[in-house]
Image (tube, rainbow, N blue to C red; front, side):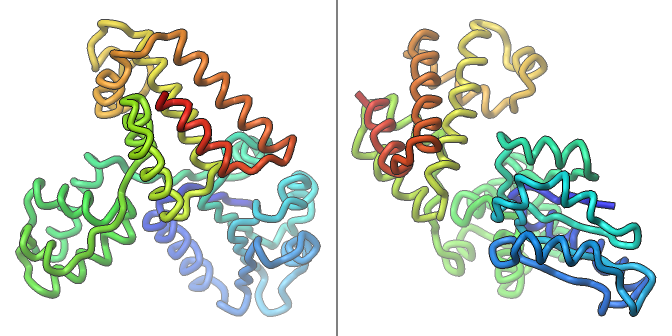
Length: 306
C-alpha cells in the first residue's frame, strides 16, 4: 500500500506521519522502518528500498520525503509502484507538490492521497485559541490574529510561539506577544497584486523580494499568481451576486471573495484575460527555453504596475 501525505501544513502533515510511524512501530519494530530523502537518494535506491523484504519483521515501512525532487521518480512513478512488495507499506511525503504535473494526478489515482493545506487566517484564529485553551491558557480572537499577522501562517511555527508565550504567562496578551516574538515578513501574493494594480512598482518589487526571502521560488510565485488571477476572474464574472452565492458557485473562501471584489473594481475582464495569457506564456518559456524565472517574474510584476 502506498500513502501520500501532501501539502505545506507541516503541523498536521507531520502529526499524521508521526502517528502512522508510531502505529507501525507498535505493531512491528522500529528496525523495519526505512527513511529516504528524495533530494539525496537515487531512483534505484528508492526502488530497492520498497521491493526488498525485511528479515527482522513480517512487514516493512518505507518513508520517502519529497521524492518528487528526483526527476526519475516522477517520470517513472507507475513503474515504481509496481516494485512495492506486498509486505511493504510506503508513505510519500510531498510538502511542495506541483499540482500541474502528471505525477500529482497519478498520486491521487494510485495512492491513498491525503492533502494538508495551510489554513486561512480565520481558521488559524480558531486553531490558535483552541490550542491555548487546551493548555489551560486564555487568548482573545484579536490577540490571536495579531500573533498570526506578526509571526506567520505556519501552524507548527505558531505552536512553538504559543508554547513560549504560555511558559511566560497563561494569559497571552498584545504586550507579551510584542515582548517575546519577532515580527517576520508576511506578505502574500494578493499583496503583490494589490500593489501592482495600484501602480506602485517600488512596493511591488519590495514584496517580491520579501517572498524570495521567505524562500518562495519564482515558479511557486507564478503558480500562486495564476491562482489569484483565476479567483479575480471568477469574482469579476459574478458581477453583482452576493458573497454567499459566489462562494457556493466557485468554492472560493468568503474572505478571498471580499478581497478580490475590492481589487477587480478597476480591472476589465479583457485585461484579466490578457494577464492570464501573458503569465501562461512566461511559465511555458521558463520551462522550455531555459530563461531565468526570477527575471521573468520581476518583469511581469513591473508590467502589471504600468
